[in-house]
Length: 158
Length: 158
DNA sequence: TTATTGCGGACCATTTTAGTCCTCTTTAAA
DNA sequence: TTTAAAGAGGACTAAAATGGTCCGCAATAA
Image 1 (cartoon, rainbow over the protein chains, first blue to last red):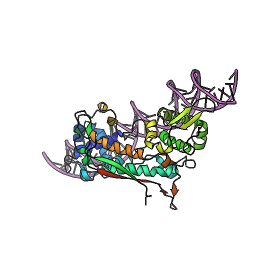
Image 2 (cartoon, rainbow over the protein chains, first blue to last red):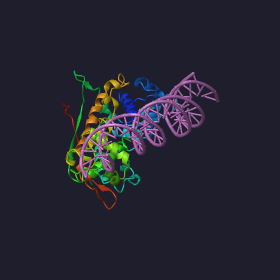
Image 3 (cartoon, protein in one colour):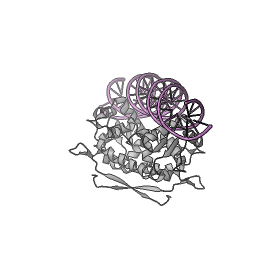
Image 4 (cartoon, rainbow over the protein chains, first blue to last red):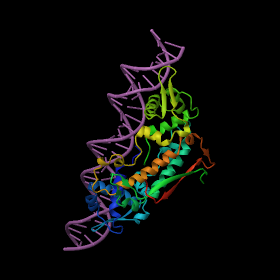
């Protein structure tokens, strides 16, 4: 279903809470409470986010986690990449040598187009965008704050 | 890693072969041979593509599979959707009632923006685009035939 | 009538994912 | 100086998803 993992989903929820007070330091347990996610799981997510420099950590008593950058500068792409590694739909887009269909596969190269498009989509949306409480229409549908359109162009890249 | 499943990957490879002769009928076994994928697996993929009306099938001797539409009209989105269901990064984008964080989650609605962006990206690329043998630069990097850029706009949708 | 081909679904092995836990390190404060 | 509160790192397990195979049935051309 082309889903992101639950952990990435959690990460965005957790960071959404943190974005409300971008310079504050939060203990993992407090975040677990406000996000309604298990403590150990929240810790796991935050550890991954530290490694990817999405949040900063302070150890020791009164320690905790803090956004490394403003919500405006924290892209959804960087969050997903922190938990799932490079954003690419196919294995071979990351490691070409790893593909078994190599000889008979004639669509490989064109994946890069799609991958870049998706990466761009995820980079275009930031934590600040996500943290805005969505306006809800009377019909129950959400009205997003921002729309993204595609504009295919035909010039070769690079 | 935000991957598509192997089966979707296979589907695109298989359909890539079929796109070379868009009106021809191919037996599953023949396609398995030319794509270098196991017979039963190819069958499984093709069955899913029939259900989603991406290909048509003819039963009986001399039967086989045939593209339901021209390669130009067959989007990558429809292929992925055939094998993995609706294209949406999160569970709750498909079924809002299914979300356990509902009360504490304040980012839900904004996923629709991202999902639509990605769906659009995948709809913009067709089988015809993918079937073009990628030009390979001397450095080993692929030079895609087409590029897709994002142009965020700030008007609310609908 | 038979050989060929797709249909539908069951089934299982493997891999991936999610979640928990344990021990160690760091640091603030009593 | 000690203690409690926090994060770091990694091992481990249960559950779920995925990939791949197989079987008996149905349709059709020769």
